[in-house]
View (cartoon, helix red, strand yellow):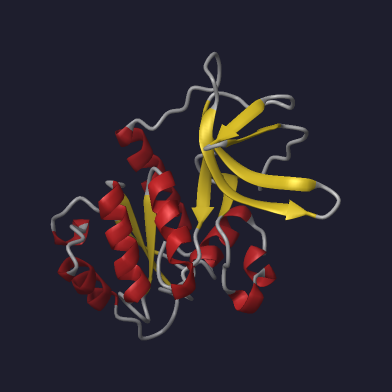
Length: 221
């Protein structure tokens, strides 16, 4: 999560070696995407939610904070804390979700990382740099700088928090991330499964709506 144009999707692109950012209108993410990535160093599977940073997509970002286990707060080193950064901090604190700060664009000349750190502290992020518990990682989604350290930070926090899923023997539960009607295919939803296993033929219930799963496609890179 973070302000528009601070490089959230570019960081994900480096991890999954794709070019999703180039497919978005104007280079701006306009929907929530759920992507499972096998990380290059640890070889562990992490599911990322890429939330839009533009001011018009407030509800999507709020929903992303509720769904996720860890918020990676992306702050551009050449821009520091901005309105959607503050909003993301508010959503994460409200949801009680732990935060990792990725200070992006650290490959650029003349950036002031110390200003970013002081701004974060001013808005009550207890960063490790100032004796707190919130990890900060200086990265570049463009060059790949310290992306291994960001991966390590996520894995370490997930292990300390003991995030686990039960895949077998229980009814499936999860979140509907997005849904749409696609011509020739009907109703399509992106679903994040938190526990259990969904199969073709399973029935899903969301609020007062239900359906039968007729086909599935995994979102992995």
